[in-house]
Amino acid sequence: MTVLDDFRADTRAWLDENCPPSMRAPMVNEEVVEGGSKVRSPNPDSYVWLDRMVERGWTVPAWPKAYGGAELDKNEYVVLLEEMARINARAPLAGHGVVMIGPTLLEYGNEEQKSRHLPKIAQGEIRWCQGYSEPGSGSDLASLSTKAEDQGDHFLLNGQKIWTSGAEPADWIFCLVRTDPDAPKHEGISFVLFPMDSAGVSIKPIRLISGSSPFCETFLDNVVVPKDDLIHKMNQGWTVAKRLLQHERSGLPALAGAASARLSGEQKVASLPQVAMDYIGVEDDRLADPILRDEIAQHRMNGRSFSLTQQRVVEESEAGKTLEATTSIFKFYGADLGKMQQDLLVKARGTQSFGWEGDGFSAEELALGRLWLSSRGSSIAGGTNEVQLNIIAKRVLGLPD
Image 1 (cartoon, helix red, strand yellow):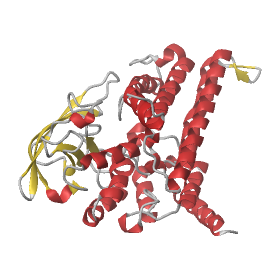
Image 2 (cartoon, rainbow, N blue to C red; image 1 turned 90 degrees about the horizontal axis):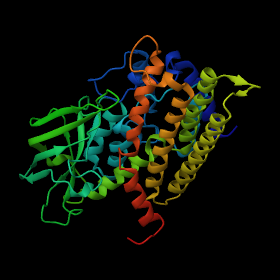
Image 3 (spheres, helix red, strand yellow; image 1 turned 180 degrees about the vertical axis):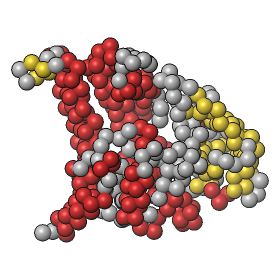
Image 4 (cartoon, rainbow, N blue to C red; image 1 turned 60 degrees about the vertical axis):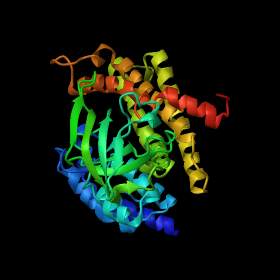
């Protein structure tokens, strides 16, 4: 047996023994653990699983051990993901901390910042949100106007952010601010961190068509931010911001290897045929509706192709190739693929997809209706599809302005 075979055997045995039964089922939205203490999963097993994975360093397996990871190489990480998928184990920890700000701090944070923030992210102690978009500065993010005045050992922040995902339950925020109003717009921006309970921070939820309020307006009135939490260099925050957006749009830091993207994507899509058969029925061992059957098959092929593309890009990045604008392709196509999946689920369930309340609909059907509505925003959040197409046209295809 090779060293990797030994690692697989040990990993399989540990997961079989330590993953609670309720953590071997499809994720329930209310049970997602994103860190912090303001929102808690109603399932105690969520935290049993989290604690056990924290002890192994497997909430962020590729991170250095000094920051709460396990320093797994790519092949070991893929084995871990495959073994988790084998038993349908849930990810123990999600959210902006592990997907966005954590990987960014690994690249741009100084040693003090990494030592102070990363272990808390890895252990699920802190929940993060993102302070990027502003009224009038969404697609043109670099036109932001939130001011950060230099007060010697700290900045004084004033301004407003909008569409702040998860602002209410968040403990900390990573935020873009303007530190030089006279510089060209991309060159006068800095990247700072601060607690959401800082004096002068106020939050107003934005209710969406789905009935939920994951997004908020965030108001900053004379918020004091110590310079210890300026990331990278003054007026060079745009460089950090772009890198973080690449993490967000690609999803690769959370996946660490495209094998996880492949496994998680296929597991999600695999529910489509069963839902369709339950609601529409079967003829000759096939879904009775030939048109929907064809659409589901095409969607699964597209999902598989997308996952293989992610896998190839991860391997290229491991070889030292910069992702650059490739992440915009992932963001654009991934958003459309996700919306198509929700459309197909709605088609499969027919009118049972459009219930809002009442005994005539199951809890799953009611949740689906809201999820379908929420999915409409996936091509807006994190950078609109139109912006991604512009980036692809200019930086991937080299088309003229």
